[in-house]
Length: 374
Image (cartoon, rainbow, N blue to C red; front, side):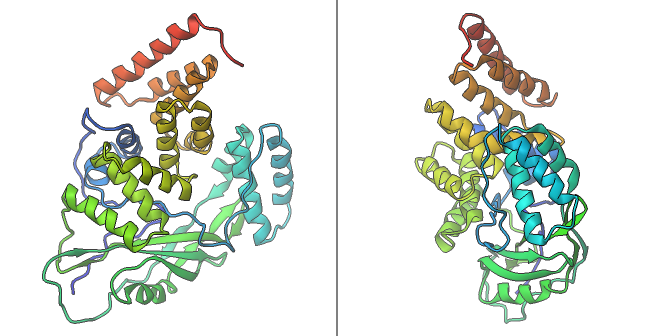
């Protein structure tokens, strides 16, 4: 068996050598929003991260009940009070459980459109950083692969306040007992833990490994093989959010008109409603179906958390604008669409820029002759 470790990362897309490129004019909305996310991070990354991407999976923390921040939903008028209470807790010496609860309440306050909470999260949360990593070695076994076989191993662990990974669970398993073998090696790694307002806190940590069997080179998977592998993953691991979100993304990129896409997207959304891309794509589908209130409900976490990033995604904003316009909320629709137009990169495909600008003009014309709904 030959082995190559392609990636080790926390909830992110695969990386590698790439070439400059942009999505085609025929790309679907889901394809374009993923491409924009990659472009804003690295303008040269479209080919390797999107067109050639093999895993777009997002792993939720549902499997880690002991670590999951309590689910909190707040109305806008509740958020200021909850935020102030959290700030007071963080000024003291909170326990790990209190920190996790505070983190959940901060996110809920941000999702309720309370700007102070969003700014606080952006400024006071420091993600974990790996400090020392042991060399990952595969199990020794007799070579028995006649051709390249592609696999994915996903492990979900608890990253403790001392910077060590513990209680690792197998979310998606590779061949034979490789996952258990990797878990033993991960215990040697050391990290700087997550920090909230200067306090170290335990958090779920997901590790993805891409072992390749039967070749010394990473596979160049065709579109057909990427889709086949994505379908097999949901069959092998039907409770894996990573498998379902990856299948949804692969279909959005390579087969958006496939009759199974709406069902796959709905399943992925039910499992990972907090994932920005799934939330945006579900909202977009609901807008097309005239379900504008439900679209805004789905999009709520995505639009606030998109704003937290250095580069908000114009496709998230465009989706919000369409939902607001469908509800005759002209002020919000115009503001979101105008910002989406402004944030489009200069080198983004011209047909898309023209579409964004045309939609803004349509909203302006319609809103000029129609009374807005508060």
